[in-house]
Image (cartoon, rainbow, N blue to C red):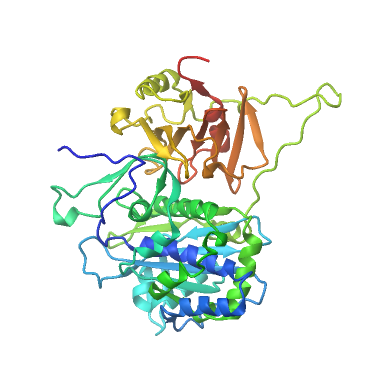
Length: 520
């Protein structure tokens, strides 16, 4: 079968249907709430009232008295975001809670934290009528008792007070994410599925997105974040959180100053919120918190799961003893990113200069695959920037199979739009890190002729110089998610897997081992 493989500079795609459409609203809801509340920090009371009216248009979530803890003015806020979904080919009325995400906004904390709740998390609870439901998947709470019961069970399970709830439905409303605009995204691997020749019962949303740093707009961005066929809930949650991080780093309330209702008047009709978010006082208070948290990074809190099966054969996600408390503490008290190391004196004298730092000692689970990396680099053919490949990688069989770089396979050679500037040369290597043990985890090696892409804004004060390369570090909490190296002509970076499966030492050794194709 012959078909066109879209490259990262192909931005317009036809609609893929309504399957999985919830994620466009959950993403829009995060941005709407954050940007709307942020705008209230400088808006007049009349303007704030207009924001409130926009949020009221979608309706009010009822029965939340037992589920929500009212916070005093100035206190941190935890918001529960719920997205409903229906599977490909299902009746649109067959809705379910498919995404449950907690967002914690606290100006005094080291980061804004985000926790995705696996929909298959095994819980036991009582409904509003006193009925007991043992060994139940947590997403079923929505069917049994709506947003209020879902919030109650999440709060009781993790010991976290929830202050607000927002629920976005699955009805077609593409304008919400389109109003946000395009986002630059670091795509970890190729995402592809076609329904051509596939039986109806095995069909799901079609997608064809190549790996690499690229701009995504509208439907294409949503295809990426909603994808779930070959991922588990944890990988998918990590991908969604990374997407939200990129949105937050590229947009703030100032981007919508000319039309502050550009988002709220669009999504407000499709989003229900609790009564507490529908008052001027609450919105102003939340806006103040967000304004003072604007400089804080987004930190992902990941659940370390145990996969089990029930007596009925259903698969569940469970948490090991102590896991609930660890997750709770990381969510409420995120750790700060490491600080830059203090300069060391040399020979007991002052002013000895900066000492060259070496890569971490030991292989740390890495394999010397320099010759293989060189052969993969040769697959790229001619490219307008120097090509660097890593000597060390975490899986000796991890390089994704070459399929002709010029045709959009692995490794990938492409060109991408740089803001309002010209197209820029780029390439991407993809390494399967997890294999069967940790499916859905891929490391990326990116080269790009655009020397100041948004993803490389605001590196940590901590940095390293290894093998003559000054490496900029980007953390998610205490874990490295990106290590970058800048040259006058191009930038290069190593992307950790979505679940941050590579250790900090591994990330540093891999980045420090980048080797130029053809020598110096």
